[in-house]
Amino acid sequence: MFVIIGAVIVIIGVVGGYLLEHGPLHVLWQPAELVIIGGAAVGSLLISAPLKLLMKLLKELPKVFAGSRYNSATYTEALLMQYEVYLNAKKSGITALEADVNDPHNSSIFSKYPRILKDHHAMEFFSDALRILINGAAKPDELETALEIELETHHDEGAKVPSMLTKVADSLPGLGIVAAVLGIVITVQAIDGPPEEIGHKVGAALVGTFLGILASYGFLSPLATNIENIAADEAKFFLCLKVGILAFANGAAPLTAIEFARKVIYSYDRPSGAEIEQKAREIKPR
Image (tube, one colour):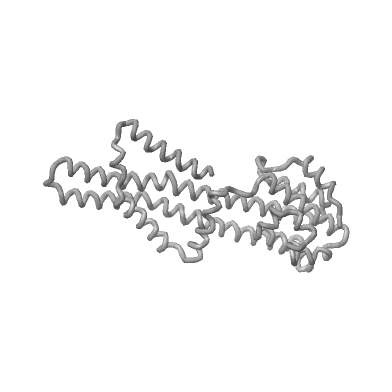
């Protein structure tokens, strides 16, 4: 929603200011310039990115309009889910969670937390960490190393799409100049024409530069930043899961483990400690 509102404000601000200076609006409508800049931008993206990254780009774009799903309510679920898992592990042993980890969707624990269950990547991250503990395949320090590697990979993957869009955004002013140069070439061919015709062609050429700069700094670069921020939100959520499970693996009590996890959450998303403790104490082991 805010992406659309922001785009509308950019357009109103730029075009509104132009109109206040009594600029003729029809001059800004130059379809040929749009074809040159847009076509070159899309073509350069296809040249620079393999198919798998282009497909990832298409999957990431809808997230911009939906916004980040990691908020106080999501973190509250994540902390309570961790508490219930650790509480049951403490009571019945970590191996008692094997069926839950192998089939989270039919788990009597995980099914209580639909926000987390719908987050496939986060659920897989948490389940894999639990599976390592259940199988006794690694000590806590080795588990920490494994989770660090996974988070680093996740961070690198999340940076791919913003990086691609940023590079395209950086190229748009230059592509605007290309469109302007082509416009000047056309103008030179009509140099012996009437002044009105020459002025129109020069204006059209300059609009190409204007469109390239506007598309770069007004739309594509902010879009890349938005996707980058959403990826950072997701990385912070994964860190919350990681810190909690490592604290528990190192012997912390369930309530202490989720308090460690709560501390890594940004202040504007972090539920209060009193709220989490109150809700956690209402949870009983099965």
